[in-house]
View 1 (cartoon, rainbow, N blue to C red):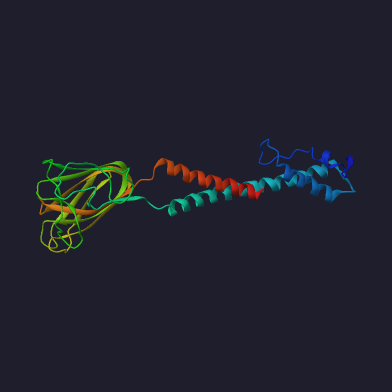
View 2 (cartoon, rainbow, N blue to C red; view 1 turned 90 degrees about the horizontal axis):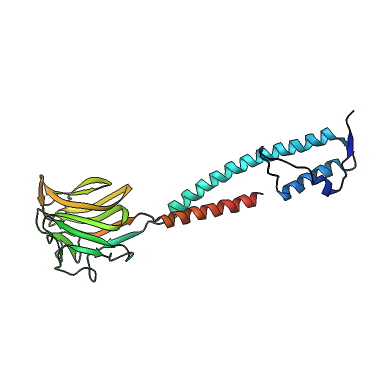
Length: 272
């Protein structure tokens, strides 16, 4: 015959039972341990139960807690992924824009244009505008080659020049208005970078054909080159309203992770 005990023992003595969750040696929280002992005392108070029966009850409670712990961890991991994805999607991409207007740019000045801050956006972003093979082959012009242009622009008057634009911070997106010295609907603009190459046919603009060039990449880059072409031969071209999309800095990514981590900890505490 099994031994029996009166389980209406003082709570302090019952609290001495150790409960294990998930096979590790960590005890359950003081709050949940107290709740387990309270439930056991309530269900068995004033009655005689066998030591085995009491142990079976506690084992059953441990098993239930173990299952809940696994489910909670799974849900918290899912919540963390959702939080990070949501924060990343809601974070606006930073851009800078070069309109080639004063005071950063002066009509008539020629390349090289070095360490130029954007007309719109962070002044810590700097770009170099360099022409090859003629170092002074580009200039800031006031002529609008088509309706996409206004005010000043960057013009390549010679058909033998390559424009190289480099910057002090990585970007992953480029957009600008362009014109090629070709009749409406002919010609093209060539773009090349370490992240990839692209060719944009000139559209039906007037008096000179052109369009809006857009390039986006999952890979960051810090420079690109532009050339105008017609039937394989280089032609003059111009650009305006150059917009660059900046790659988020590591500090911003860490802040994003920290925010998601804090939300995860908060959710975990609420579930206890």
